[in-house]
Amino acid sequence: MNKTTIASLAALPILLASCIAAEQPNTECDIETVSLRLETPTDFFYHDYDTLRTVISAETDIVFIIRSYANMQSVPLSLRITDGASVFIKSDDGTEVPFLNGSDVDFSEEKVHHFRVVSEDGAWSRNYTISVVHDVPSEGNLFIDFESYRLDASGKYYIWDAPEVFTDGLWKNGNPGFKISRSSAKPMEYPSTPVAGGGPDGSACLKLETCDTGPFGRMANMRLASGSMFNGIFDVGNALKDALKATQFGSPFVHKPVQMRAWLRYEPGATFQDFDGKTVSGVTDEPDAYVVLYRNEDAGGNKVQLDGNDVLSSPYIVALGRLPHHYNEDGSDRLSNNPIHGITNEWQEVTIPVEYKAEIDNDVLENKGYSLIIGFASSWGGAYFKGAIGSKLHVDNVRLFCE
Image (cartoon, rainbow, N blue to C red):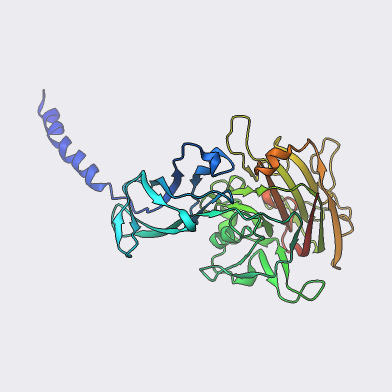
């Protein structure tokens, strides 16, 4: 063994120690999943998979919904948190104690439990609440007027309350993603905004506008953001990584929709562009509005959640109603400069019938085996970053009629 080799071997522990020392403690402090361990889950929940919740990045209030007659007391609770983090639960006297996975937690009388997750380096923490609430039977017909809105906690953009039938009571849209690309935008410069007194009856209405996402959006090849509104989940933490997957549609529903009526008015933007920002000449942008009912469980009992990839094409869809567009013979979209469905800048009530592709199983329906989607967008190709900047869709007084 020569001197060079000996010197190299002698230095190896020092190099390894340097590598180990360079690895910094984790700064993340998130709950990633929450699970309740029950021997017979469907005595309390509608599906076996309802006992497990994946927590999206922006979520801090985690709510499980159980059957209206169920009473959940001491239930083993398990949390998956980020590597190296610690989790504490607030006791009845207000003090924090370490939480041990699998410990029984009393969720009777819809008690709310407070948790704090502390990062491995101890410098960061995040507060969460976990609760179990009883399902509230909903009326079949829905009336949506978009009059209940407010600024989000950051004061940057607007959020809207949704009918109780929607799981977390909030409408979703792309505003949180737009905040990433245009952080300097004012609340009324976002793609989804309210218009006080702007509705056909003088009440507040919803305005969806296709907006330029600025230099950051161009760099990410997401050059425009269509104004949107839907029920479901928007996982802003994954919006840049996979925008279609981050947009998850639908809430469990126990009625059979047959028709949607909505008051609409529309102004297409001046120049239609493809996803790469290139102008598509002779094309007029079009709005989107749709109702979808889909089976939310597969043959193996696994949860089905539609996202931006298959919201209008999934084989689990049993019924669909959509604002007419110009289609190719095979059903795919084609660009057209023909007027879209007669919708103009004047308010008009539009009727969208819901057409069924499969028979409804009433037992499955009663046990929330189907999910409902209601969606609107200012550009029909906005999910693929196609549209015309400046396209504006105003929406108000939406009615969903059920059988």
